[in-house]
Image (cartoon, rainbow, N blue to C red; front, side, top):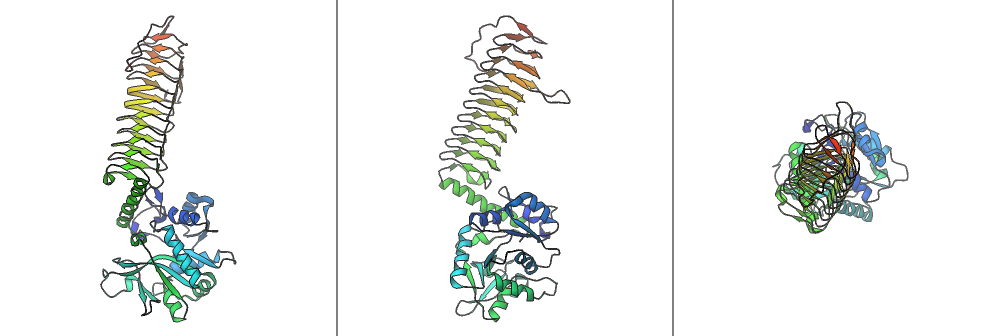
Length: 450
């Protein structure tokens, strides 16, 4: 259910679209149900949120609009009405509880079906949760009532069993009860009212206690958003460490939920890994690195640098203080030193760029050396142009490559050259503007700074 207005978030963004560990809140219950193999997922949304949620999830779910915000009971009625008639039981989750575990929902369903309940709730025992409803049981342990936090007259911080907001229902019973559900004084219908209704009619309502109580934490405001994120962040880092990843200082590292990291990789302090970043085995990432939606193969090192939508093959070395922007592709063995920026460029195997350079919209052949201060001048004020450099070339310090331009395989440029014409294979370009020498002098390649 994702039709609530979420006013306490004080945001122009609908609450289901706020993110925890890099993923929108609404994605967590949808992905959980998909992992369980649920045949049909229906999202109840408001007229405002439905288009945005639909754009995010696409065909992963069906969408039903609750025309007016008349409470969770009304929202559930709209959702049930969209289900095909052969559905016997249904699971109902909110869109603001991203910590709910698949294991708990499976346990809830198993208990519901084995006991033949009309209604089964996920609960958490001995919780101090002043904004959650309290479970009331009789002397035999049967669930008899659910008292909303706003209606509780006692101490709100007394530990008690609380409602997690995850339910399993017998479909026909739910549909009948929702039709007769009466609104409260504020005009809204609440799903939780069904507990006392079922108990009064002699129907069986059961509560299944979570084995990990913190999973019931939901998001109603920005404070709870941060609290939930802190819990999930530790879960993400713990999962990675138990799978063979070293996280040197978990308190200073931030890793999104969809990040994957290979065995024996080390994550140094103050490192942020975002989006769908993929990192192979035996890498060293950080300290002080930010990597977003990038793919890093095995045996790489990224030190105090930023990567955005970049790809690194095996054995690449980046940093410190370099920036790989979208479209940067570094083949195996590439070395990027300090203060180098790469954008929409492919660097061939073993390319060296050790010092403060800009390489944009370029293709650079294997074994080429990029001297300090090299700039591909790719923008003429209106359009972007490409630079093509062959394999084994030697680009001298402070070379300006005025695109569109090419430097052939084995060719070289002198220090400070402004290259605005193509340089053929194995020749040398020197001067401002550069002129082509008929014979290239022998270059000592043992020094990679030029």
